[in-house]
Image 1 (cartoon, rainbow, N blue to C red):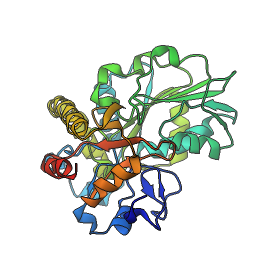
Image 2 (image 1 turned 90 degrees about the horizontal axis):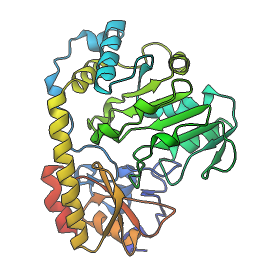
Image 3 (image 1 turned 120 degrees about the vertical axis):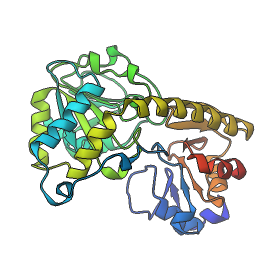
Image 4 (image 1 turned 180 degrees about the vertical axis):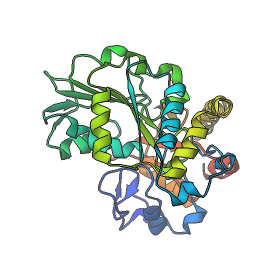
Amino acid sequence: MTNEMTGAARHGGQLQGAGRARDHGGGLDGAVACFGGARADWIDLSTGINPCPWPVSRVSLPDLAWTALPDRAAMAALEDAARTLWQVPEGMGVLAAPGASALIARIPGLAAAGRVHIPQPTYNEHAAAFAGHGWEVLRDAAGPVAARVIVHPNNPDGRWYGADDLGGVPLVVVDESFCDVAPAMSLLPHLPREGGIVLKSFGKFWGLAGLRLGFAIGDPALLARLAEGMGPWAVSGPALAIGAAALADRDWAEATRARLAADALRLDSVMARAGAEVTGGTDLFRLYRVDDAEAWQARFARARIWSRIFPWSQTLIRLGLPAPAHWARVEGAL
């Protein structure tokens, strides 16, 4: 372990003491405390957030967006934009929420606790949420289960699932937080009409994670129960207005997909020249195999670049895509 890491045990891409019990991307405050510098000095590549977000300046927010409770018309406009963008099949519901994580935390309460299959490794908030509601979490499909959760494409390896993975369980949850880089791959057309939920994140592809906006699409009865659990006015007025405008901006989305695909290939080339092997990922994050993940993370950290490593692997490192102004820093660190 490098000198910089001494006295600050590393756990899953975050330093212990960064204030979170489960490993995630982010945790930049902990990195700053361990490696030094000011937060503004750092480039955070530990998440899969688009570094070139949708420009909120395109929306002129009225004062009422800040001073009045959100109205039903604004919520309907947002959900209609979501329904159009994602081509939601007839008969399925759409529910906007204050971030996909708010939905993930509540979904296990929709059914009596039993056995849930969540293939691993994957985004760990799903297992934590189900376990917190008393479910038995299985990483392998062994025998009958009452629920299944798949992350599509999977985080961190980018695995895509198929329609055959959706059947045979009363409750199936498909987390498509990173699927907007390849919308044709969505499993929404194959989702069971009863017991099926697809989750969509606004913070990843549109790059506005701080806005806290996410969506559940699927079984209207389940969505009604989720809405009841969140209470009225769950989504802020600014999020309603910005979200509706961004989801309708098809030209920006098409240009962004092309840019992200090119940048993903560029990052693969940069890392390969430094000795890393690409093993998966999406056009929002890349997964590499290296000789020593902790050493690579420390190498980046000395250049004030934060990356993601995992408690279950000594050789895998995940990187988000740099903003245009940050490529020289990333290449210089290697």
